[in-house]
Length: 234
Image (cartoon, rainbow, N blue to C red; front, top):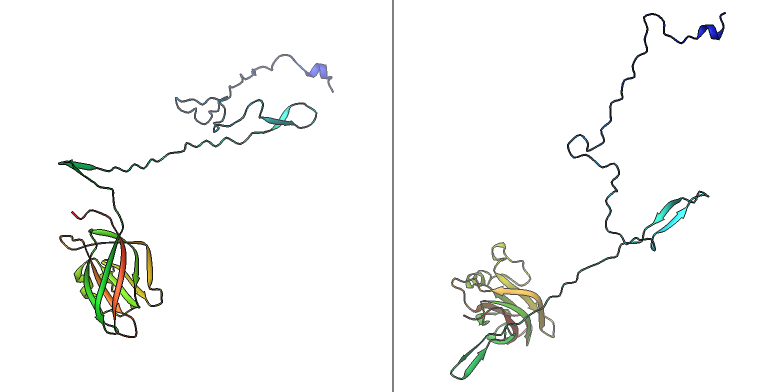
């Protein structure tokens, strides 16, 4: 067997030459396939943080003295409070030495007295609420009764034959303002979100009221309504 010195040679055999190394194809990073190249050294975007040399806490792992873990303080919550100023404008008109001031809407008390009603009898009336639209606040009666208020006379007439506690017909559901039954003393009802309006054409300052005697004896129903008119009577 020839020795290693005789086997190794410094030149290639006849007909063989070393192949030139082929350059490796560059790998494009995401975002570099277009004209907007990505910066390899850009930092990751972070929201504003309250971190500084005095507040950044860092800890070393091992004895290398190189920080491996950092604790960032929570960002400070900054909120810009808004202040709402409610301004009441009071227009006034002066003529001939006298002045008239409009101070805004004010609740009104409306008193209603029905004729003598038999047991189960009803009284159909129109109530002047001094506004085309209004908010009901409370009602106080002198005895057991049922109070129905409508936005039109047609809805009032169509609903007259419905018995107490019966569901309202679907076609009248959009024109009844309220329907309450006062059967236990004290006969007081307080509304929280009941708003009504007159739906006649043209509109009028009227609410259509139907009162039923719910007692065991004939009586004249007396009701005191507290109503907030929501617009002027003009």
